[in-house]
Length: 246
Image (cartoon, rainbow, N blue to C red; front, side, top):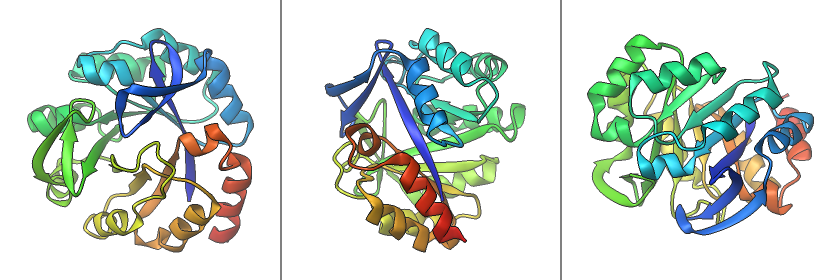
């Protein structure tokens, strides 16, 4: 079970939101590069970046902060990025900068043809982000709820050739209320590509529960507020996950 520290960027700072609300944020760092280095030094094997401003604007906003992170990390570990990525040129630019995987969320739902083109042009580097509330997919920085069922869309996008799915339960994100394991397992069982869990990770018990269902196709979990608030010790949690994996 791979634990993936999240660095959510708002106005160039490292923040965490509650339930995806841009007006309810907590700043955990002013230096994105230093934050990335912190998690790499703690044993992270992948980083998860989100351009929050970009997700709402529909275009990249925090590129300077993203480049600072890439400089700090170098080629030590993969870095995945989502938020405001709506065209192939942006994908190509980020991949050239050193991003390993591009996460497409809103654009995948609104313009599935774009996602298909992205998978064709940049095969092996495209992950789809499905953010949901009560099983329904949300878009536009989680501000709009659609009528699409998560599993239906995930199966469709799997056929396009995406590398994996990041599934976020909006109602739990940033709330430390525990991962929605039942919904995540249900999604993973419906797919043949890996699923990464996100939203609500709170403590070591969550890690152990996820490790128990890893064989269902859950590859990793995004770690946000839990590791920033101190509710979860990242290095100890990854060590425990590795122990449970044998």
